[in-house]
Image (tube, rainbow, N blue to C red; front, top):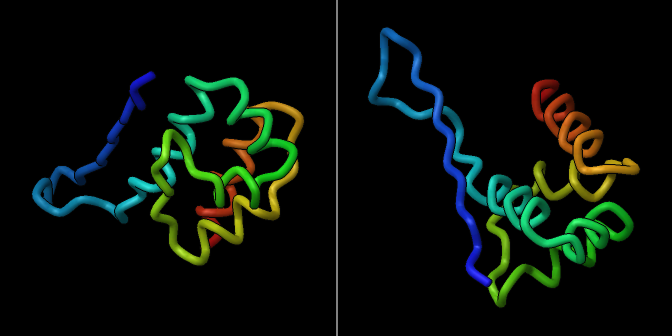
Length: 92
């Protein structure tokens, strides 16, 4: 199974060349959770183990802050998980 890689970048109209913070590792975590139910369930139940195990033999390149946020979020579904991670990132 191939890993779907979604890349979203937001460019302000006055500075379209400069991307916002690189969150490619975080995007890969959520992409893996979307396409693989086993990874998704492990991420929701045991986020540290899910991140340590990676996906399809590849690890996730996360900042210490992203790792801490994901490790501490508790949610019953991926939508709630994503919302909580997003809120935590906005608070940084």
